[in-house]
Length: 219
Image 1 (cartoon, rainbow, N blue to C red):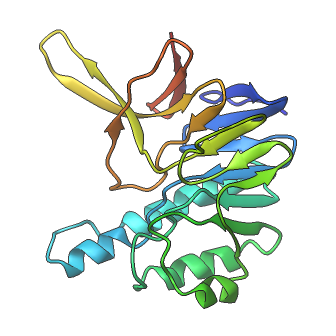
Image 2: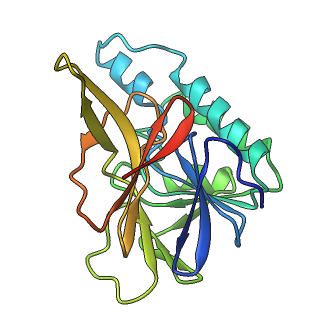
């Protein structure tokens, strides 16, 4: 499969994954798109609490998902937890309608700590739900990191990983990243308005920063 400009190809447990600047990973052999921490409805949840949050966040997220499903031959789209931010709100219906617009794609969710919606909503949207960790062909998919990994590889979310860079005038730039260790890798938070947690890579980790619509490998 051709790797486009701005993407990075990595191999884990004998499988190949394309890291996309749209904050997702595409599993080539299985035609599976992995997305973590969308936090749909977060802006609506915060506005109800009296905070001024932009109203375009939901549709921006759906537009990015559209790009990904168009860019890759996706058969399955698996969300690695925290798909919806909190209780049901008016963000669910546009998202459900968006899923129905892709009848040839299987939409699946590995449950995270924020996924507290009534299971009937997932069923009504034809979304499959998995408890973590969900294993497929030696790859373990979860929201939280697995405590032990005897074999295979674990992709997870939850952390919202980022790295910080300091400029010559002591200005700081914070960017989201993929952090891939020897046995487990963290996907960046897909959703806008999710924040970043600064990570401290070890010498065995590979860090891929997302910036300027590119995935850039750091030495």
